[in-house]
Structure formats: C-alpha cells, structure tokens
Image 1 (cartoon, rainbow, N blue to C red):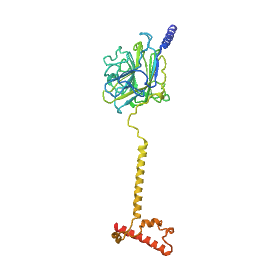
Image 2 (image 1 turned 120 degrees about the vertical axis):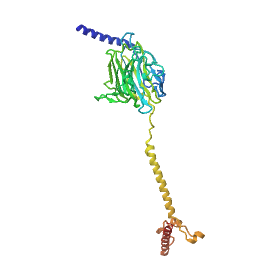
Image 3 (image 1 turned 120 degrees about the horizontal axis):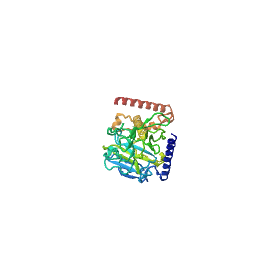
Image 4 (image 1 turned 135 degrees about the horizontal axis):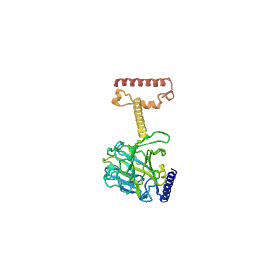
Length: 385
C-alpha cells in the first residue's frame, strides 16, 4: 500500500515538473480591444473602427472565424499530456430584433484557423456535419448557444455548453452565474445585448475543465457554471490554434456577436482584463430622447402660446378701452374734437393733478364729460350686442 502511495505522489510531482518545464515556452497574450491585434480573420469576422472584434453580423447562412495568428504548443510531444491553460474574454450578443433566435458563438481550440468554409449554421462553423463526434475533429469548444436544436439535444435556447469533437455538448447548463455572496444561480440572457464575461480554465494535472460566466460588473464567481472532469490529451494535438467561431442565422435577421477583450495564458492564470479600457458597443435600439424634448420643449411651447394669448387679449382690451364713440353727424362730417384716448392719456385718467383747468366748474365739467362718455359707450355697446 505504501509503495502505491509513493508511486502516486511521484507521478503527481512528475506531472507538475513536466508542466513547469513546458512553462518556459508558455504563450500569454491580452487584447484590451483589437485595433492592433493582427488576428487571423475569415468570413464575416472583422475588427471595427473602435476596436471591437465582430465575429458575424446579420448576413444569413455564413460563418466567421477569428484566431490568434500563431500556433500554440499544447503538449511537449504528440503523445504527451495536454498542458493547463486559461482564458478570459468579454463578449456581447446583440440581437437585431428582440426575441429572434439565432446560432450562438463558441470559444474554440482547433487544429486549423479556418475550421469550415461556407455555410455551416447548424454546427457553429466548427465542421460541416459529416464528421460529428469523430475523433479526427480534434477540437475543444465552449458554446454560448441562443438556439435550441433538438437534433443536438440542446437543453434550451439560452445555455452554455462544453463541446468536444461535436456540438452535442458533453455537459451544458442554462446561462447563469452565482454571486460570491449568494447560494443560488441568477439567470442571464446571452442575447440581451449586454456585456458579459466568460472564463475557461483547464487543469492538465487533474484533468478538469471549469467554465464560469458573469455579467460585466461582477467579480469572477468562486463557483463555476460548468465543471467537467475530462482529460483533453487525446483531443488536443501538439500544436493548436485558439480563437472564436460562429455561424449566422438562416434568416435575414439575427445576432451580431462581439468580443471586446481577450486574455489567454498557457500553464497559468490569464491576465485579468481591465473593463474600463474595453471599446464601447455600438448603440442599439431606439435613440434615447433628451428630457428637454420630452418635458422642456412642450412647456416652452405652452408658455409661448400663453404669452401670445395674453398679448392679444391686452391689445384688444386696450383697443376697446380707447375706442372712439362718434355722434351721428360726425359719421358724415368726421370728428371735430380731441380723441378720447388723447384726453385720457394727457390727463392720466382725469386724475386730480391733471385737470384741464382750475376751479370747481372745470373739474365738474371734466367729471360730467367723463361720465357722459362712459354712459354713451355703454349704450352703444348694448346696441351693438
């Protein structure tokens, strides 16, 4: 029993020593945006002007591939054990129309940079369908799937799965994450257009794959979404390529998938991405209308109408107030007197300080004239009505 125990310990340390020996040639890279990335792009994949990696757009029945340009050693020999690796990337899956279904995207480790050519919508651009499950495929992938295909036993239209040589996932779960202060998983919608983070980690010594999902603002959860004990040594060749693959919808509408940042490392933990340095997503949905146009402009318009209305009312009232009341003979020969308006203004309304003369008779005359004019105006107004 003790001999077996010592043998197991020795094998364990030899595996770690081998991993450490390979570490001298470890590959590590990080992209905080892709403007100067020099990635190998094929099909619909492109880098936008502000540094977003767009895997596909809404063009129907096409594929997109984006790979790190250089091959990476995943083994020391062709028959050796696969090294450990880890990666983190930030992605967003933006629907053209809310609720539309479309194939998702995958992170993939594959023997070549161009996995398939031409239409391959059912297989996420990983193969053409004639080699489903075949050991000759030699690919490992983590799928972010937004379409439920019963042919491949998809659990729903919003799940994360680990794919080995086939899009029939070896294990999958609905998209969700567990906060470090909670005991349950919270659901996430992959095709929400929101930025999310994904970590993929492989322990070459223990043969364990961990996949962790989280929204952009969350810290990396301690509990992975998927955890699978699986030795990738028979799957991965000595040199492989790492990157992303996706196929577009068979419809004219679908998803546009973006990768905002990507970090990768062999035999160690990938460097954490700086979220603040990542490029911004293009605006989607209806344009946000300023509160000025929603609230301010109607109020200003109402205020302007009120000012105009009060101005017109003031003008009409003043015009009516100073309207001339003419005698019948004046209609034929024209007025031969001072205008009431002129007298009113000159006397400031016939106040005490502005009488036209002195003495009681003048004051009485003005007051009588004032009353007479008011009486005459009232009578004419009644006749007009």
